[in-house]
Amino acid sequence: MSVNGTAVTKALSPRELQVLRLLCQGRIRPQIAKDIGISQNTTRTHIQNLLAKLNLDSQIQAVAWAFQTGLAQSDPLARSQPVACPNCGHDLELVTLPDVRRDP
Image (cartoon, rainbow, N blue to C red; front, side):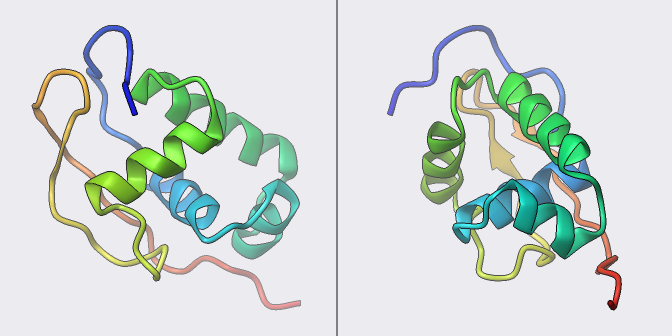
């Protein structure tokens, strides 16, 4: 996969990373929203923001990139090692949030 455009200058937020990992598990926007207790619109915003930061055009590209870089972990809340930016090679500082799921 080729990532096009300029260098990524901002790291993914903890929530964007969490959403990306849930996408990697095959979850869709309504499921992600329910799992982490946010609205579908907020979920869409996180997806749009992470695509912009990674300079990617689709969720499929983001998922492929996450698998290639090792970010697609089985636990969407697990800590990860720094990952190189697909454009410039600089380390992205990625952190995760504690589990914030709400019980029904």
